[in-house]
Figure 1 (cartoon, rainbow, N blue to C red):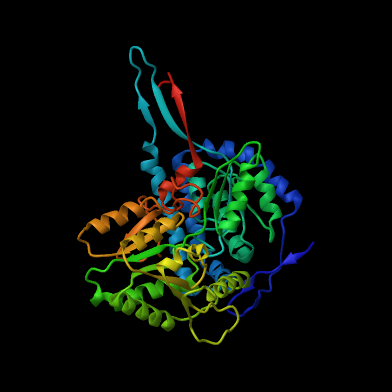
Figure 2: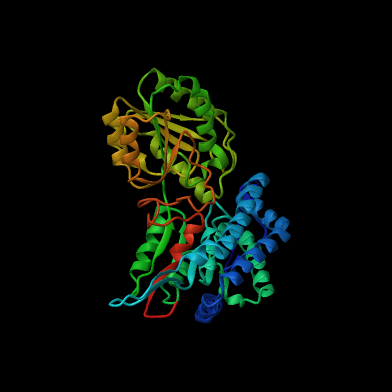
Length: 477
């Protein structure tokens, strides 16, 4: 059987461990266990599932150093980034544990019987076994026991995780913690299973299997679209909750920010370049007035970007895609391209920006697409109509940021009204990177930012992706 290895971006070489695709027998065994696992988990109490999530968090804490070792050598991300993401993962587990004991217990609604009308009770029930596909850019928070998996378990749905091939060691270390927690809390190990593949065959097989009832995905538009189409081609189509591409526009309005140019240029330069810009919420389109203020802001942003550290990207494939998209944009007509002058070492992502006028931006749909990495486009607009033509031309986004005075104006209100139909989150005078785990967080947006803009992939409300409503008529409360 052919094996494969994960890659160490810092060493620009493969790690020593060899992994193998899950065998056909293993895959079939996991699938055959799903019905019994679903019956058990869907009938478990909120209290029992809450305790399971807390136990998983404790097992992760106990294995933190082992997980950290794999995380750093498989992703190239720093130890400090691990600490942030690890704490986020623990917080997600704690948040859902608390939610199950408090708000979730109150989601049942009831209409009492009247003389001529029946009583009605509406309840949430779990949708069924969920396939979760690990993300490339968050080996913990959006992977094995990340947001999708935690939400599904909290809902009462068994989970099959297909590990991301770049992070198999990290994924297995986390999976072992989950299995220990299941044993300690008297849950069958079949409610959370783990499979490995470095290609697409396994995902195709699992997506088409009738026992899978929903899918959680974080990744590219191309990958998400392929899974959505495959799920829709089933005799019984299932929902795919895919969080995909987003360019995350930023609009600067000219009203009194001359003294804050340095602050915002530095803030956004860091947001563009942090961890090589490998965030789905990285700001990628900057709409800046075409005047003295805009020219100063644009040049300062370019200078601040050049000062940022260039770091290794997650994997050679991601780096190659970044270089390809960046090079394609170099030849954009009527534009100015800037790239930092640094020696190319390994798969370091060298940051770059492209400057273009709004009228030329409108003619080039490729510039409106996400470039995954430290790259941004600066668009100079001459008037309000050019700005709104540009915003209207964009597809769905995860976020949009507005840099403006807090005092409302006709322009400000018009911009908000326009953007709220394009995005899932609007930020005033701040950056889009940093997605707080909170009930009121909306992490999703109109297609292609996500496959269903009604749901969030972050926060306790994300549980509703994996639930459906059933009304019980004429039943006692």
